[in-house]
Length: 263
Image (cartoon, rainbow, N blue to C red; front, top):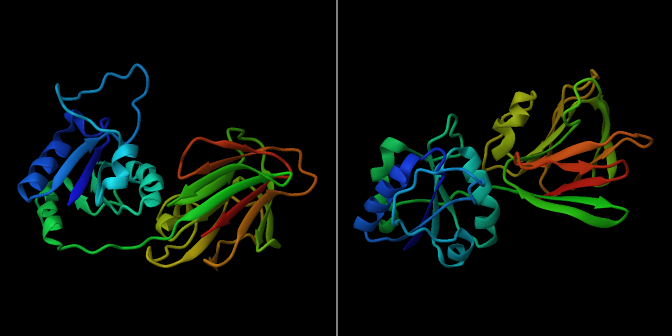
């Protein structure tokens, strides 16, 4: 069994937790490689052990049976986009403040030895394919495990006029700070904070939650996974919006753009 250990060096100081996991897995008979989940920021001085052999995650994923992520929920979200392309399941070891998505805590590392004996199950989670179309062209594409969020950006004073569609039919129009389109996994993230429902993570639904809507009729609602959910600025709007997928870097959404979300 070939296992990738990918640890967030900003949380796992000196990669001590990852190295302990490596020792446990090798003793259990696994073949392991160590990778960083992302390229460190330029100028950052990381506390990494000397003479430690680190591999490139994108090169190791095609040959891996499992990816063990050491860090917070953000580390798992970041890894999910690449791992899912290769059909590699993820096991999270929590070193963050929340850890909703992780299966193990630091003090439970000894349980990793069960992996090589086949004593585990794989839980499938629905993801979203997010696309922005501008004048018929695709100008943005990303995959989300948690959510896609359309917001007003950094401006405090103004609100957005939004339309939400299901299969291109308008199902909600409102003014507010934005809207969250979440998976069941993401129902306990930003969607929950904005007043959305908690949905069982193994379900297959799309949860639409308005953010601070200036309307009494704008409520959260849940659609089936076969729907195509769209978000656009209301016709005649002159304001721009920002799209963030799984908390990533914002993409500017212009009037006339379609943000489309599918299973």
